[in-house]
Length: 93
Image (cartoon, rainbow, N blue to C red; front, side, top):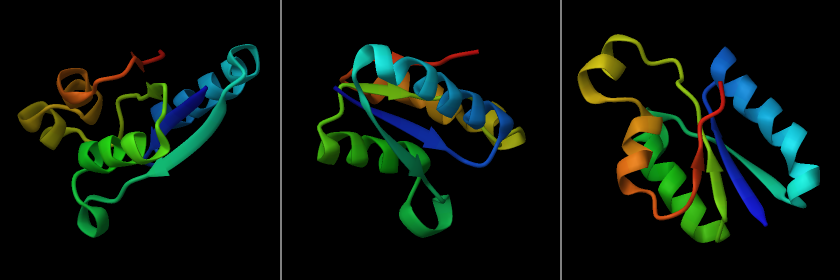
């Protein structure tokens, strides 16, 4: 099994990485960390979707990130992934 976790430097993203560290052993999963910058690589959701497909990941772990006003206007990356991802998505607290 392979898990993708999207990070942006926020505390919630750190919690997502911690969730992966805690559960990867019991799931026998390899963890791939994706750090997406909107300016350089496109929208974070697009980068995570492309990486998930390229890595043939079984599970994506996301979390509410740094966005605040933009997130309220456009929707969070995690919310967008719930609509576009064709694999299981975990959003830990």
